[in-house]
Image (cartoon, rainbow, N blue to C red; front, side, top):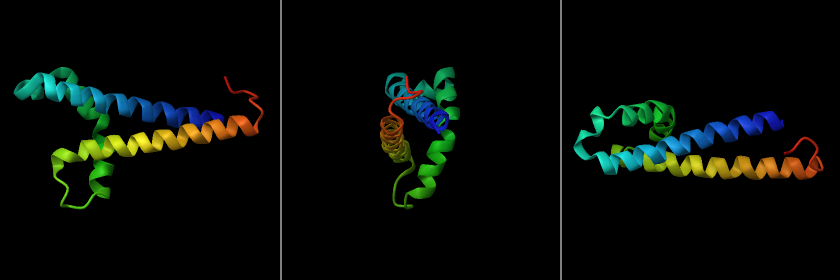
Length: 98
């Protein structure tokens, strides 16, 4: 169980950082962001998460706001996984939790 929680936490952490990096490059690169290699890489990494966020949000939400929705959904999921990991470690009396 602990290995699953660690893996889930890692995937969520990578996705959160990729969305954050994509947002920073969105601001810094301006109009040339589509030609930026790292912006494209972040876009590929975050595509599954933004796709899920698009499916969960109503059509009234603009496409440009979907990454914000994905970021906050991932943030909530990360907090849930972290709290579950803490609960698991406390119940196991910290055996194997480092």
